[in-house]
Image 1 (cartoon, rainbow, N blue to C red):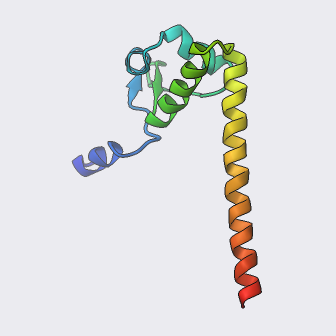
Image 2: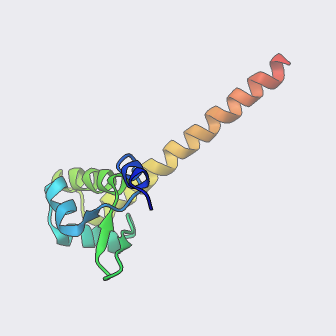
Image 3: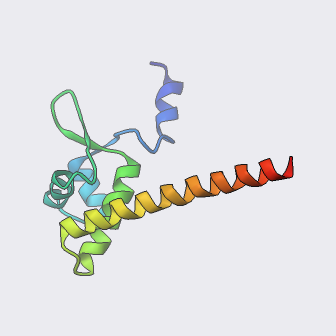
Length: 109
């Protein structure tokens, strides 16, 4: 791996760069909270060679959203389900927009 490869990872939202302790600190929660949303299968951290959990920036954004919901009184399991449903809705809307665009292009041809 070259230095350039290492620097490219700095911009990679999916690169598991953060330890559990650092991840919890960054989003202002506990390690137990991160374990709980992992057990609820909201996020699945990668494991280091030593078996330690590693989180990506993308996973931290999801965890922060879960924390926001929990802070407003939503149980952890429900918060995880809400986030999963929000993600599914966003994906469905993206697919619908692609179909609409393709349909309009077909009509215009």
